[in-house]
Length: 415
Image (cartoon, rainbow, N blue to C red; front, side, top):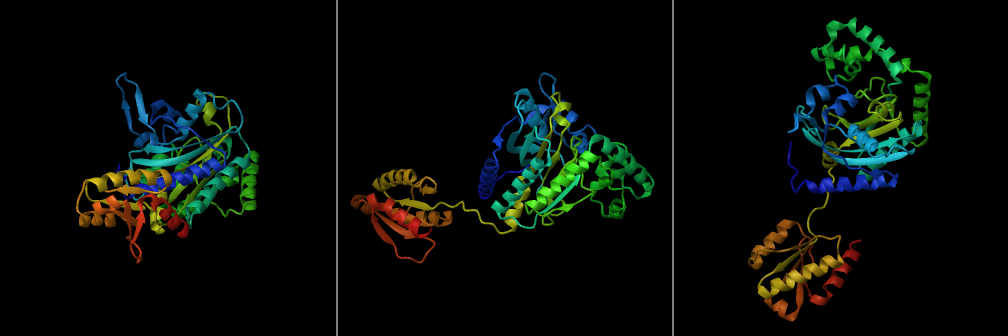
């Protein structure tokens, strides 16, 4: 788990703002649910034999002896909240959320034990059009962020019956090549064999490439759904690759699954993933309800923003320097007046006193574009000296009552 320091938080604020704006543009409504849930919720939804439940969850007993778990993902909690609060009674419910998740796994680049995700979930819509909409929404988000080089991979896991038939075929194939399976894959063979297809072990690449393909075992409905999704993505001009070995690490997925991947973050190249989970609502006690969603990792997206050289401005626009008791009073009042007028601009007032020299050093270190300077003489004359800290321009003297108009002119001239 890691601290997010002041030099990093502007990236987080920028990403969160773009995410909110994009989700809102598609008509999704925000939901907020607890960081902790009953452990049984995740065991029932994610799957007791998945790596998350077996090895990665932060689980503990509270004072009443109840087993609680810090949420390792958002879908299960979102479904639970929607069920308990009657949100699934009407068709077409669209929800989004963001916040921290927790998994006790080996930290690596872009992955921490407390990590942050944004997710969307859509309920009551069975066709491939809602799958396509969610994918298009993420694609629009990448464009808004200016992120390039993300590859969309799609697959279908079919219906539960088709998946069960495929599982038998896959297990038979893998048992014929037991000598090529690593220890982790042998452990998964009887519990979650589809996850073997997601192995990152390069020594197993040829074995996996030659494995039976689930797309050849789809039922008619799943095939039609997957064909429809591909047609819609093509019509929208979104490039994608069909990856027949793409599976998700959570048991509740069926039919559509997808990932956006990049080669710029090492082995952990997935930045966004999701798919359909039509059986989960009923599995958790609700009426059978089609559902689809996605989740994206903030740490990985921010790593990509930094890697692409994106600069997110977090410096103050104006730094107010004031020396002397009367000047400090005038500076405090002026700062409030400017904040009233330029609410979106950052105004930093020097506090703690100091000479002109020391305050100018602070102003320069802050990264501010302008310094507004008030000494005792300026305070008496009710004037402000305007000094440009980042440009070769002469210093100007402006009446204190006119400084707002002067700054407005600068904003206009700079676009």
